[in-house]
Image (cartoon, rainbow, N blue to C red; front, side):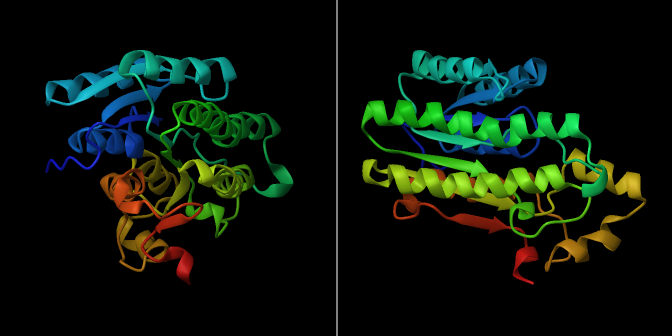
Length: 256
């Protein structure tokens, strides 16, 4: 379905080579945005951009390591050089959650995860905000958090800490930039059917039928496009009076 709710807008989506980021990029292109596919995976990111263009959308790929300031600055510059401006940004890039208890967490992986999931989101906001403020026409930034930013699980202390941080940073940026009509919100996905989740099921010997009721009042896993739909609403003018908040796209997981 094509609906031009983002027509005339330019959007960056990080982590857009696969999963929720890819679904968001494709949906935004359907909504007539010009989309920057930003990812560290050059092969898959380029494939997504080319696929969007083959289907009549506008997209370009840029390789980025969001943990590096120079890369993030170059990403924003590439966006403006390519499409002339920046209206929307979805900061989605993240690493796989850690898998050890607090008493045994891997310090090297802690540093790497924090550099991408937390510092990376902060760097993206920093340079996206600078560009939007320079343009003077407002904008919308959506940070992808997680239910782990609200209801922690055991054995992933780094991921839980990072996602709590993303929620806090979202509120700070919303407070600071509201007067310039730059809206900053987040989406907190629940259990979404991705290769990462399927791998975890296989690792622990669970089936979807056994595990989904523990994570969802709807007794099923979410789909990547369902997160993309929530993100699209926050990116569009339909949410023009919404800032500093989080959409819980988690089938009620954090409500109980």
